[in-house]
Length: 155
Image (cartoon, rainbow, N blue to C red; front, side, top):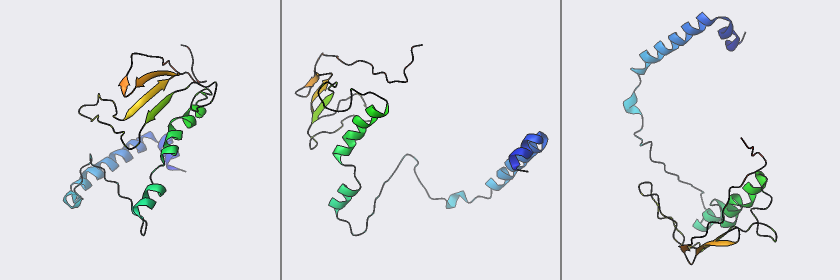
């Protein structure tokens, strides 16, 4: 018999087993050498990638996601996955949502403490063919609308 079947058929045994394991854990905890554990700040994450013999250029091209792939993963790929057939690509007859930026100058100025800032370096943004950012300044146009995929249901 598997443990799950035993626990279902014998609930008193299950309760006693759980009580035993909790008690064992409590008594074992005081014997743990917690002071020997490494000191780590759980809020800090360091990522280090090593590729022996690789140049910095090979690291960037081989590991860092190319800009074209990153854009595809944010546009045409998710649009196709959720069935938005008129989105994600720049083709005649499709809704044109376009962002024009310089990869050398774009950066995010928002922080966790002060999150309400737009990215710097975005020159133009067009939503449904209407400019909502022009020469780096936000316009008053609001042409966006909710996008509903094939799973949308009216409640």
